[in-house]
Length: 154
Image (cartoon, rainbow, N blue to C red; front, side, top):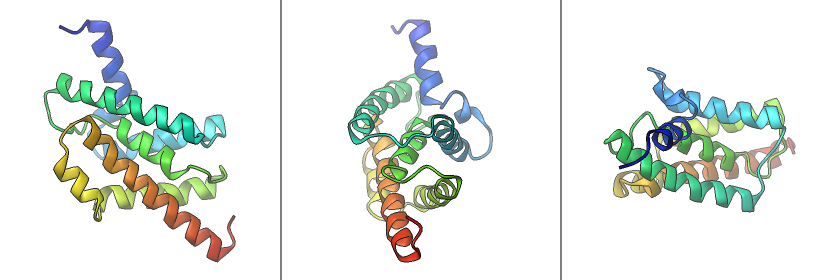
């Protein structure tokens, strides 16, 4: 049996400090929280830190899946937060870049082109919850960098 304080901690983290409990578009609000974190700290996360956060997110989302007793509960928005951090990897922090990455990430996360849809449908656990958003973040990052290169935004 999990301790109540630990469960509260897992729910707080997995729900993106409660963004997962917003009735409409909780994933979008989780992504907004991630953007706010990047803006407040004016920081794009390093690769080693991203790997640690991804690993911990998989564990937290696995536990949250059990706590919520739902597969890939909409209350879990930590995956969007980590996915957005990935989408911003190596990209200079500016309101323009955050907005573009936000839109790209949400589009990939919502429409789930292959292999995002494959991961989302195949893995119904903490790994699957986080992995599809990581791939959406990678896609958003790549599209941003290619577009920024051709438009001289970087």
